[in-house]
Amino acid sequence: MPKGFYLKIADLLIGCQSSSQQLILHSEGGVKHFITSKSKKPADYNITYDIVSSFDDSNLNLVFAGEPRDNEVLNYKWKVYQTLNDIYLVVFFEDHEQIKVVSAKVSSVSSMVNVNVLLHHGCDQKVVLDPLIHPLGSLILLYLMHWKEALLIHASGVVYGQKAFVFTGVSGIGKSTMAKLWSESGVQVLNDDRLVMRKVGKKVMVYNNPMPYYQQHPREGELKKIFLLKQSPDNYIKPLKGVAAYSRVLGNFIQQFYQQSMVKKHLEIVEDVLGIVDVYEVGFKPDQDIVDMIKSME
Image (tube, rainbow, N blue to C red; front, side):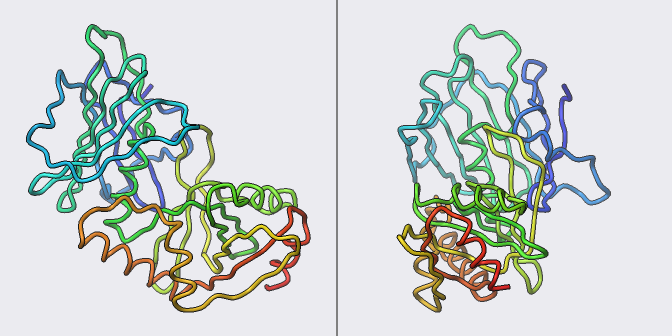
């Protein structure tokens, strides 16, 4: 396995490098198809991984804390701390065989991210680490994408022709079902759970990103429509404008931010995206009719 490699995610280049002989970065998991050769362009971010002998949060200011949902595979708790210039994303594992704590120091003024791994006492075996280990990897991506004026959203997405459509809503509303319907009609699915949106010039691009539990090749498309899903006995499509569109889409973006400036910037990015992309409410039954209705809009 390579000691380090580069990932290309949402058109951003991220270098990953282990600083410890005991710590091997796993290149065959969810990141496998996002690994790329280094280009002449410098990396947007560089992440170094190391093993440490202790973790001390006594001098850190706790600003955010979270716990997993009931259906998560690993038992853990995560917290966000801050110092004057840095943010610390920390995951405390309850039942990981080797890892006790994994933390990442990130900063809005630096392209460097430092990931430190604290092992259980007496663990001297080689540790094979997913560079985007869940849930730390999701938190790292959230902040790195935010500083590149990008958004992470809970949604499925497809590319039809030259246009991308995103389907979002509360958990269980039918995002994966909608993706399956499009796949069955021969359309490429971007992802059925989490996507990245970035404004590029006067258009919005949408990308898939590495997921911890399955492999997928990088995919992207120019985003044209966002559909807010609603279960209904009848299929219908209703356009949403202004505040109604903004307020209803907003809650589906991933947004574990705590600083007022970050929240403000996040809201501005959302507003910019929705100024370009059309938003619709779509009620649907799980059949091909709704796919045909959306296709007919084009």
